[in-house]
Image (cartoon, rainbow, N blue to C red):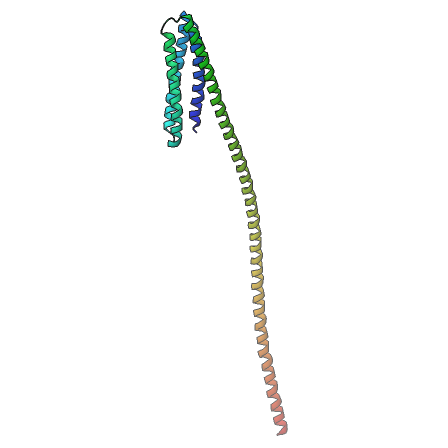
Length: 220
């Protein structure tokens, strides 16, 4: 439902009830007081027509399903406005006898009471809709806050995990460096061992040759 339309609707209902009361009061008056009251009513009718036009424009700018409902309500308001115009013409048409005046007064009072009851009903419905909208807004706000808190908690967890991953990465990088250094040490040790093996082998070979030569010369 359009909030703009509802605003115009509330204004029209209040104005319509007020005009009904003024029509009733005008029917019980005479002379200049009656003319003044009718002038006020006619001014109010112009304001009511303006509100009707605004509601019509707003209703036609909405979606088809919403527009159909609002235009149906608008037809009721137009009919109500026409009834008010007819009432004003009847009051302004001429002198009324006391019986007709009393009948008009009773009719006007009944119309005013009906209009007031209808206005109260519409205002209560509007208030209920506003309360429901307010509750939905509060619920949405609460959900939004909970979502925001959850998002902050997730971001904090992700930040902690990132720090842990960075620490693990730095640790692994240090381990890689140590492994690289250890590998270089092992390679150097292996080379030394191989070189020592060749040296020892050469010394042993030289000793064997020397022993053979010594034995050969002694036995000869």
